Length: 489
Ligand SMILES: [Fe+2]
Image (cartoon, rainbow, N blue to C red; front, side, top):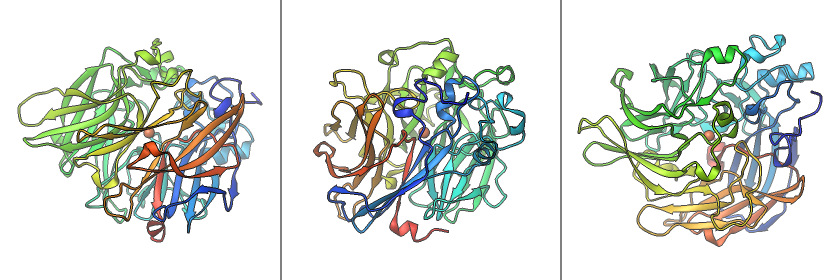
């Protein structure tokens, strides 16, 4: 193919942009709070070259682009660059796609053999003065936070053994350590998971490997003050299927889910596996914390089936969005009563992109934010993103008994994942910064950065900053304060 296909993965909001650009002195409507001083980094998949194979998972394989929304002294600017992965450089040199289906190297062109397949398109992670562009199928690429120049692959000074690193790390607010893992750590369809800790200086201090009950799509995990927990949901991989040119993932409704738990500074031999419901799926966990009497609660955006249409198709499933049973679920496990399964309670509505204040990571918490669909919206949600539909309502959930707050967007608008910025004012909950897309015509869109009072989301944005350029849907973002940027390694 010399042109991008006319399929949903490449049209409308998902139309490839493929431009690197800088926008200085953006027009600000409203007032940027003084707390909002730093950079909002965003990861966006954006394929540089049309595919040569049909691939439902293509939306997840777009070349990683890193963008920076910079806030300095009440002014805002924007910059966007490709992450210069080995894959992107090879394809740019060839002038065409060399890599085939999502996470299936058996579909690659011969020139791609031996090259790093990752596209670093999922989360910009900031730790120990380094900005890392991550994707769970490979090792991260380090990017200069000021110039957005790619500095190369990051392997913790040659110490990391795992071939993969998750895009969902957890940073302990007390110790400053980064907890992370890599699944399929030694290759395709492997059950090996590497569990790792980097200290606050970014040195890899621990890497231990363990086996999961089966090879699963392990997108996220959680920590508490004393434990680390690895959820396993039955979206599975099979090497023979890959060799036959098939999809990396299928979802198996008849298989158990699992939750592995071990002391976070313990030995993987101590891992205990608790059984969860069959067939469930989750991409993002909100938080986890320890209760009294040896119980641990794990809060997650759960559904009864994997929500990705391309994974459902590969699995022979076709579950309507209204039938997926999405909910914010709390799984509680008891380390002391001898039980071997989790207990579920529903603590919130369907949705995704959960967000908590960084100081509450792994601790009991009173509130959180997430994106959801407005149940009162008439008409379909905006099409776009990997699941095919974009969220149109922002929620502040309260776990102390107070009612939720909601910010519902008008029709033809949608949210990308927000980041949270703490406030310097005691008692103030800080700010949320997010990209809002607006459909203005069949293939026309406008984009703006919104700044929202995190404790009063229903009031709408305190500032809106138009980005006068097309943007593709973001995956995840990360806030890096000016003080943190000043410590860049
Ligand atoms: Fe994610």
